[in-house]
Length: 592
Image 1: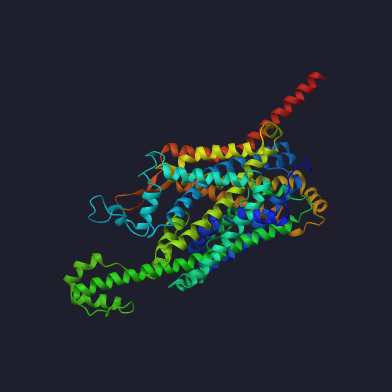
Image 2: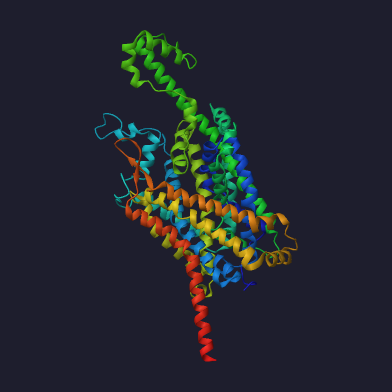
């Protein structure tokens, strides 16, 4: 078995695969949001502490388990104890859920990439209405970038209850996204190993280009000052620490089984401790690096909007009160407004509803994450840049590389246990198994291309993995330390790599990391309970903005099923194994 197992061509290929998997869209669209929410530079304190006490130890643990057991997640945990097969099954189920919706992001990135070659960019201006007498009403109430996202890309329905039909354009993009993933995983490590060089390194090339461009943009320093100015009072906020721990946990992709799958193709003598440190440090560095790029562009967008707002207010007041052109400036605007309000109260009260409150701080305070940051905020900034088509192509190409790199890890977590299974692999070749997995995922993923697809996407994104992964990794650490035995695992690692395991890793595995996971699990559970009725953001076309609505009963049932279907694998498989053992024992006794 061990001799027949395929291996990475070299250790660098394995490191690139891990980086390509771990460095994903969360680094670009979640970490900058957390910096913005929890005190800018001061958020790095809890983030780095959580990296040391949680991220590195758990990443090392998963890589070591995969390298030692030389099997996918199901086989690896079954080797440790037959009762733990459910941990591997739960990982495969969660990875399956993730693959179903994650590739939709790549489909959207393809859609935007194809539209990036148009001049002007289709999201830079509002389309004309049916009579060609003015701009589309929904677009005027929202913005051109929001209109392109919600109406042209998603063609979103007003609520979850109105499913609508499958949108053929996003559906074709999803087919293309799955075809690309299939071609990348076609021959297992042989093909994946070559692809990861591109998916891991190209995003950095784009980020460096964007950094150079971002730093030269007008107002970039406003964004960077906002990011790096620490708000030390946030260190006393427990949510800052919880979000730092959560970000590290999900960003590294722990619990999905992908890291175990990748490590199982390693040479047994590989230094997995060094690999764990390298991958976790590069992952965190990328988050900070991507934040610098994001905030420089964020500063440009905020400054652009702020100056635009000032121009509109100045023009309105100049025309209404016959002021001299150029008299109003950013420094004297508030003072002049006060004077005009007291000198001409009637006239001022007539135009007051049209006077916007222009504030750079409030523009920078607008915190956005996820698809909102990727497809609305970034496109808003790109459309105002010179040679906007070039920057748009680069940006969506980078998103594709990040998304496809993560998809390679997600599919490896599903495929490795399937190809390891003698029953499946004896009947089907590797290519056919890969094709079937992609086909099933793509067929189910069509749900996310319907008019209500984005609402279902949010459900899967918010609930398919959170609690399940915390439980999976908690059981993993307990299994290694207290079922398999920490001393036994330590001696295995020493025999395998020729290096002793330091006290630091043992303390983290046996105590600190499991306690951290338990506290995160309790927080999320209590947060769900205290929130009461779960709500979602629906697009209201008549207002041109998002409105909050309650989830219908069937959506709550789907959320419950998503959480239960993966977490219940652990106790159910253990129970099934126990019953089978007893039945076998009973049969053996009756024969005797």
